[in-house]
Every structure is written in structure tokens, then in C-alpha cells.
Length: 533
Image (cartoon, rainbow, N blue to C red; front, side, top):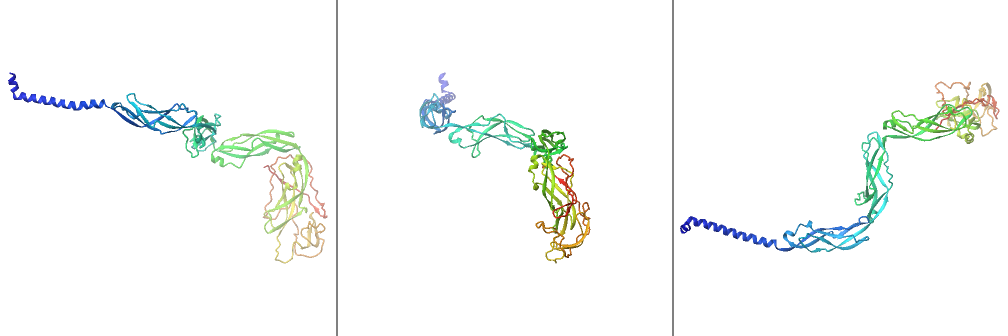
């Protein structure tokens, strides 16, 4: 039976196939298994490169690690292939805990390798460590703004509000000298009210770069930036209302603020004048001395507010004294370019004024401090009676504010040097009617100077006989007569200085009084102008 089965050709083929498969499996299993067993059990060495050196035990409060050279090392280890792990499993350390001062020292490396491998060596085995001592300096922090507030608003200067006036900056000594500033930035973009924030500080070197390794203490401060409407600062002027009692004069004033700040839009501020005026009522003052009054300031149209809104005005008054100031020269203004003008009355071309004020103010006044002028603008040749304008120092006033002063002025055309000598002003002659200073007509002839020469008191006009062609007006304008047609009137400015009304009699010279040359003079009438500044 067995023989039949074995002798069967098909069975023989199947058995041959099975045996060949088994042989093939056995051959391949031997080729793969034996090398794997040999490779897994094989021990070798490996070099791990670029292992970062890590310091530890360092006193960072006192020192700064300036450098470690080299900063990476190579570590050689022994072990089987599966145990040779990636390089991040290997560490190289250096112990800095024994360092007691600044400088450069050589320290051994301490390696940390996996337990499955054996440490062989490191290259290098020693590194150089440079330590620098930290130093601190005090700096004043600066706060700057970033951006712009809303339209119509202005930003003020940033202010540190937590009381920090200085901060400490700690750096290596070699770098501390590079510090330029300690600065913080606060944003005011679009702000309409005061901005308050905690601002982080940064240290900048001389190139404007942030020194990130700097230690700042404190590292931040509280700051604010005032935001408000646009402002304009104007000087303060005083104006006066009311009258002081008759016996008192203003001796001086002191104001609590001489400048006023106005808040508002830029257009409203641009429309303001050159000053702000505070009005002071003098009628409440009853006796000499010092009194403090409150003057409220009116809010200008279109503005939001004014600071301060009122001022304290210290008013000093005294009982007045009087003084006569003599020899005040009268000046002529407004004379045409081709005309000459001469004051004929008074011949002295000077006036005397009775003024009042405090004794100190009166003592300080000199004749040249008072301006007396007659305005000839628009007048042609002829003789005119012109009102005189008086400008006094602000510390004094006229004893009689109603007094008037007129002068008689003769205007002639300038002589033509190329013409004949007839009618020459310096050596002319009169032959016909004339007038005295009181207006009475006289007849007579005479030659001499048209205007008496004050430098020669012995020379008297009109005493020599002779002829000439210069004609005087038959009827010169007298006091109070209107100028020629077309001549604009001369106006005088009213006084703006508070003065007490006077009840004293007019002490001006009487009409018809004789001067040193035997001539008669008319009385003086005055118009005065004086202002506060």
C-alpha cells in the first residue's frame, strides 16, 4: 500500500514541492536572524557633536556671564546601536557656583549622558568662562507722547504722577557707559481728556537701540498727559470805572496775575485781541490807603473758559498834592513838507501846568515827561488858533481837568532861495495895518525879523523904519475863530485816567498880562490826553 502511494507520480511531486519550500524557508531564516543577533549585541563608540554648554550655580544678582568659550563641545560615548540616542539626550554643564569675582576662569565640563551608554571623553574638557560684575546707575525717566489728540485739543507735557523721579539701571560696567536715556511712551491719539496710564520703561543706548539685557527698577511708572482745548495766553490790562473822592489820587496798583490763559477753538482764539481787560470800580474807595478788589474777567465770545476767571487788584491811594510844572515846550506836528510854522502866542513857546498826584509821583515828574503838541495837519499858509493836547504820566493828572490851552500859529510857505529878496522873512518890512495881541488895529511901518529872535533879547520887532513887500493879513484869525474852509478840525482825546474832579479856581494867567518885551499875552486854555498802559 505504501509502495503504491510512494510510487505514485503525483504524490512524489507534491512531496518534492513541500521539501523545497521548507529548505528555502530555512535558508532565508538563517541569513536574516544570525546577522540581527550579531548587530544587536555589537558594542561600538559614537561622537555626539554641538552639545550646548549650560552654566548653572550663577549669582545673577551680582554678575553677568559675558562669554563661555567654546559654547559647544563634542562628547564621545560607547554603547550598542540602540542605546546611542539623539544628541539632545546628552548635556554638557559647567558649575559657576564657586566664582567669587569678575574675570576669566577655566572650568571643567560636567557631562550628563544616558545610563545605557558609557561616557568616554569630551572635546574640549575645559571651557573658559568670563564673568563681569554688574553695576547700577540712577537715571531720570523720560515720558514722551505718541499720536495727536482730537481736532481742536492740545496736549500738555507728560507728568509722572507716582512720585518716581529716578530709576536704577543695572548693566555690566562696560555697557553702562552706553546708556543714553530711560524712556517710556504714552499714546494720546484722539484723546479729548487727560490720559493716565502705567508706562513701561526701556533703556536706550547712544545709537537709539533698546538695551534688552538692562535691568530697570522700577520697570514702569504711572504718568498722565493733560489734554484740553487749544489755549492762548494774553497780557492783562486794567481799566477803571467810577471816581475816587476829590481828595484822593491813585498811587499804584498790583495785580495777582499779569497774564490770562484763554481756552477755545483755534478760530476763536485767533479772533481775540492783543490783551484781556479787567474792569476795576474805584467808587467803593472812601479813604487813602490800600484796598484789594476782585475784578471778574468776562469770557471772550466763542471761547470755552478763561484762567484765572478773576484777579485780585490791590489799589493804593493817597491824598493828593499839587505842583506847578513850568517850561513845558510846545511841539508842532503835521506841518506840510513845503511849509514853515511858528508859534506866535505865547512867545515863550512853553506852557505851565498845575498837576496833582501823590507826593512821590509829583516829585518824579519833569517837564520833558509831559508832551504838549499842536496838530497842524491839513492847514495851509495863514494864522490859526490851535488847541494843545497834553499827555501826562499815568501817575498824575491835571488839577483842573477842564482847563483848555490854545496857541496861535503862523504858517508860511518856505522861502525860495533862488528868488528876489522882496518879502523875505528874515528882513521883511511891514507898512500898513497890524494888530496887537488883543486884536486892536494899529498902523505903522517897521522892518526887522518876522519872528523875534529869542537869542537876542535886546532886539525888538517893529522898531526900525523901512519898506518891504511882505503883507500881513488885514484881519488875522482871533481866538475862537474857525480856520479856513476845508481845514479839518483838530480833535482832542478824552482822558481815560480816573481823576478826581477839581473844585479849585482856574489859576491860568489873566488875559493882557505883559511879558518881558512889553507885549501882551492871552490866557491859556488846555485840552489834555492821558491813558493807562
